[in-house]
Length: 540
Image (cartoon, rainbow, N blue to C red; front, side, top):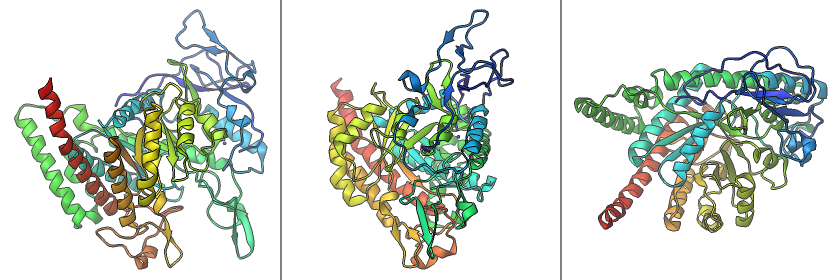
């Protein structure tokens, strides 16, 4: 997909960058990448160069559209009372680490503020358009990836395998639902994780909880658990490199529909799900052959490439602020660390710092919603984050288990509909189904995950609303972290290949099995709606 050529770049309220020369904007073809401590105020503005420092501490915006006559616009700041990228500092911020060296933190954030954006404004706008289609039942969101990315497992094969299983799942869902599938990865930035407790205790020793590789290490020692701001720079570099590879996979021929038979992962090849996928791939091949025989080209870009976006939880606010840029075309602010961000269950307070930050950026946003969510509070939160009620702006990601889904979700749907709000409803069947195995490891039963997905579809059918997608913690690796599925991972199997840094993930076979089950529901929904469509045509 073609990216916008909009320049979105940073500015500091302290001396930073000139605007005298022109910096070429990269034009890849795929959209894919902070604490209550005292931080230096960061503002954002469009620029056209990234070289020497400016002398003014509060410089105006120089529009890149101007030539000989510069158009100046004041840079918003916290003191002005208007929203600015640092407005969140005036609110209570939860789930943020305490960095011991404030000067080093400030230096790191200054450095990240000079880095190029990881994603572009035009890409985020296109994703918003796609999600608007899912809101009305004309597309389906497939959002998936690691619970938390790690530095240790960062390699090309892991990225490729996760991308490949998402391609497979997308093909299965598109074939069953006969509608576009919006593929969004929990990739290229999904590092930080919220914690139930600030401290973790082992054998009488208390240390800061592990909050993700971009904050601290998971080893239980003082050095590893001390929040280190330098980790944010490493996270930025890993996110950029991950996205670079994803762009290559998505636009370099790997994702071509003609390769649908070659996407199968080796360890799923001789499984029941592998057999089902091969059968579907052969049917796709036959359809492509028919198209070619009819003179319809399969060399069109839509058949050779795929659209792919990235997302992560908006948690580490100093990092998110440092990567916020002002789009020179629209004048809107975008968090350029990812195309889509979501606010979690622990940080969605109406008067909290995370909601304050998110309400001012133009990225598509997700809201994680559990059975604890009050319908009236959800309506207020949506109105804060999307006052213009723009379709595609808000995705509601429900996570509450099958029983609660059937009881609580109808009230949420009715409240949102009654307020006249447009949202995309998505199900996260992972977080509401976490249990502790006898061996002490966290796991998730596949049957419970599938039961919640069924409940999600059943409720939307009952309410006459649209099931817009699924949000999964999954991997392309052959891990044993969730029990059950066609290959029957048992409690005893968990320790054989349990690699997650945080929560248990579906493996490739379980992910594909889930995709086939969802595709069956989409197919039934499509068939059921066809007589209505035919009747509507006849009436006209």
